[in-house]
Image 1 (cartoon, rainbow over the protein chains, first blue to last red):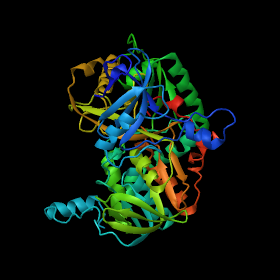
Image 2: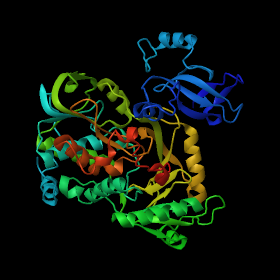
Image 3: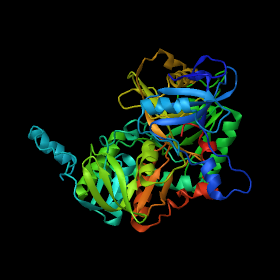
Length: 109
Length: 414
């Protein structure tokens, strides 16, 4: 069972309390963008076997969106952080560097 | 290879069964093959089989990280049906279903195809209208299905409860010629036939890199050394993203864990397949007597082949409302497989940005039923450069907005 820490309420939530929101830090392309941009925003995903950054919503709690850094193979959670950011926090990148040397995810390493 | 037959059984009976052969060879890898298929699951082996049988390509290797048929081919709930909504889907799934009918004879291997009928329950008004639409679509596609009223459902499945307070049965979409097959036998039968044709099946061989020169594939690096090839087929379901990454392109795919479970074996109580998409559960009884139950998928990216426990609880809780007698059953085993989900819940059988690399993936939660049709189309695509069955399943459909939307039609249990 997956347990995530909600950065807003400060509680450890069971996954049944949460709604998964898919890959994080996507660049949102709007009107005027070309087909390749839309494809990348709407459909193309990293889907890594390993370190993954993703969005979650504390649906049966405070109701707010937040980010999580997680390993998709072991379900180990490296950390959670608030939604108001376009890139993972350095503190969490440091934790991942230590636990998964050589990892990469999109252009973040 | 010695053929299986009634005569062979009689012959071996008097020879103390000393004459049975290994079903497939386990050769050392050659330096070079005309074509390599990555992934010895049902789809990969079927692709290799039809490349040999329909297109005469026999200098071919199927490379498998684990053991053949050990992924989703050995983890699914063995349902075969073709009652899809969109024309492109109906064409390829119906091709697959019809190939299943003659597969045992074709492969000389008993895959125990059992056309026992698949019933998709309509338990809400929306679902009822959805299936009526599917029935009409199927009629145009030439796929025989029909809506049946609750009384007929009860006649076919006496253990069902029609008037459940949450999930009443309002009718069902019934495909009489759908059914189940023995999933392992499908992989083994194809593997045996491939090996007999001269294909090398390399198990316990992990692909670690895809070598390219000038935008064209020239070979693969594996845990047993480099192997050259002119054409490469990636047929690895849940791990497609990892392989695409090696080849340098991205996929519109997310991998999640889908679960299934079986009960203790009991006497025959249900001789059809019942799917209840509203409650995320589907069920059939195996030849051993176990109730085989398919459950829900996780909502988040996951490679654990395990899945979350609460999905089991949800599935079982809903199923016992529709089948009250199941509440007394003990569940024997639970497992998960990694399914590759696309945005429109339809597969990808396509050329890729790398010349000579083809990909067959995105079958999501419903790949087993498609194995022969998928292999047929993928083989044609790899050999001829195009396949009518695969034409609409190209990667470019996501960029061009030509989706084959089966998510509305199929819900989750697919």
